[in-house]
Length: 551
Image (cartoon, rainbow, N blue to C red; front, side, top):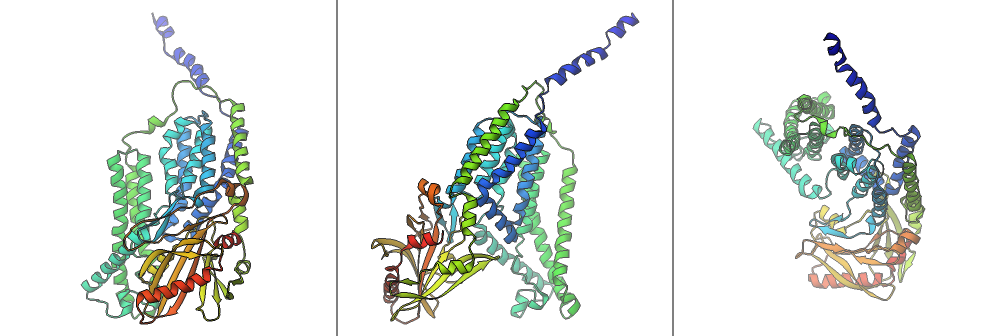
């Protein structure tokens, strides 16, 4: 009987099942194929170079959006994590190649897409900057991993849509009001501790000798954005419910603002202690960094505490399926790699490709000045200058004069890759509201009457007219500004396939400005005189030829 029990022992059964389980596992693709996929995925980023370059400029020049440079690496790591949990499946679909091609097309037409001017004078593209990046990432996953893995990587790939972490409209709608609130809180706290500000410098809470002011960057939005994104990723990793996930994100944002208000109050205390002590005054920046770092460390400890809590739902749903999967066909995978490479070479061969546009745009300021017309009708170029931001030339301007006429400024926005300009925003930043924003007919050098966006301004010293238009070498579009009766206006730049195939043209914003000393004449008379002066200048200007010169 004992021998019979030993024969019926389950040990032999396990040993018999083990080879069966091993045989059901799909064969792993060769290392050479993995290297080929990795190299192609990295090289394919050249097809969306415009978006990557703009995002990099945004991350490195705007402290508010610098957190965005961490989003693509986190997205890649989380995507590979899901892929590994699914057994590195290679069930790719040819739909992925279509998505990759679509991302390249979106990159080509994004600059010539439909735009609109939102309330506040901000130009926003209807094709978001991060959309081609997201479509490209989705295409790579679909092409090699398959639809099942793509569905499970909805969050990591969705993070790519947040590569520009703070919307453009936040500056005018959120950032400035929050700065005002933060400054009021700091002043109120100073009054509470009987240290009420009395001089203009004290109203800013820090004198220039301290090396910093309290108004710029004091609204706490940077910390709130950073903690909000950390909470977003933490909620995904812990696989919490949607309500708790939303609570994590909201809590992170509120914690960022709360810590910022604490920081401001502590800085006020430091200011009171340091005032009159040169050594402490010279350490104001370091004190600010120390206070902010300490508060951020506390926030990190809170998140680590949450992360170490036991997960309610283990990641069993992301494990590879138990059933056998057919081994991937190496030949089919190499065909997909070859098709990927062909699509990339095709888009890079276009004259309008991102790399060619970059080469054409890498012009020195001296060469840009040489592209300004030397004479436009009776107006002669008298001087030229350029404006730069972060070492990059954005605007090339020229002053033109004619006998018996005012000096007229012609400005061309030369920044490539989707930089659109609304002159109304610049005047608003100076604190000037337009007296009138409208569209007026002007006759250009082609002899055709064109309605152009026109604004009239007056600061009590100078009366100005500003006319602007957006042109490609083959067409121009009215850049409508906001009027007193409308909150939104539209700019339509119709993309032309011929431009992508032959010229690589991109829209160029052009502005004409006429200034005149303020007079007590009726506004209508002043505006009519300025309009007539602008018409004399525009009669000798060919905007499309000027756009061609600055391609």
